[in-house]
Length: 169
Image (cartoon, rainbow, N blue to C red; front, side, top):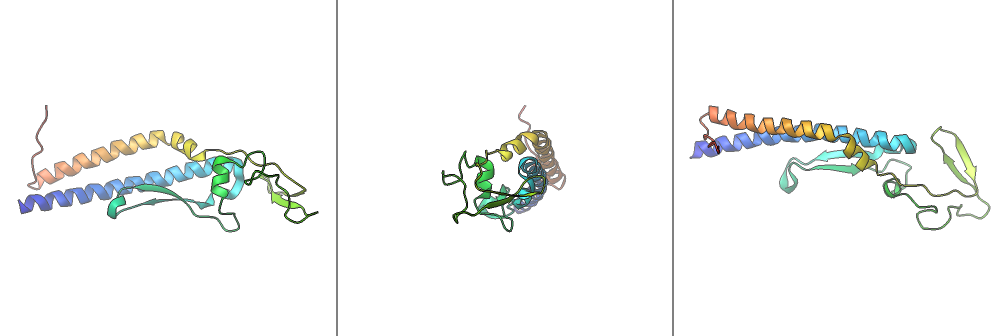
């Protein structure tokens, strides 16, 4: 029984490691797709997206998309990108300079700087949903590969004197 337990532990560790590798690959593809969606509309703000695959603990095998605030960007930027600010700014008031008589300065997609007395808010774009939709085929392929990895691990463990898995047919 001890040999059987050791075989099962080794098999599950191998399958988990391969699954984590697949999740890591998918995380990279998903984030790249989301970054392309952001850059299509919002320029260089995509650099803060990243992914993490937890390998240990309660969250083992969990893929998380994280936002690391780019330098010189407001912390709320990710919310504004996803949900928009409405016709006004994030505080539901017109977007105007804090100092009377001042100008708002900003850079547009084409890289040119502009100065205005006021601007309208921006619409949101659910780039995460778009990336999810864009990577549907990748997820299917990943699920097939992970399933095949698990089956191969079980077969390998049987070849090493592991348990025979009963046929349920």
